[in-house]
View 1 (spheres, rainbow, N blue to C red):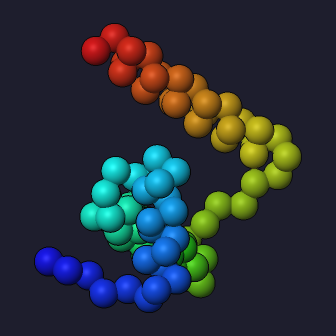
View 2 (view 1 turned 45 degrees about the vertical axis):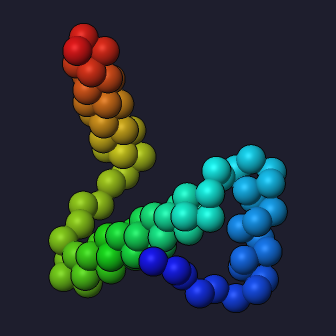
Length: 87
């Protein structure tokens, strides 16, 4: 299916293909759409976080409790990494 884009964007895509960043025009356009999809998902997550804050759904931390929370997350992340490495 042909995709019509501005001449400037077409030129940029062709430059990226010549530089080896993409094999085809379709690959370049798919990469752009994937970035748009990720951006949209990120903005949706930000909106969700804002709603949670507005509704009072958050935790307040002082320096000590924040450090403890970081340590918990660090241990959890390392636990996940070890499980993945074992697979």
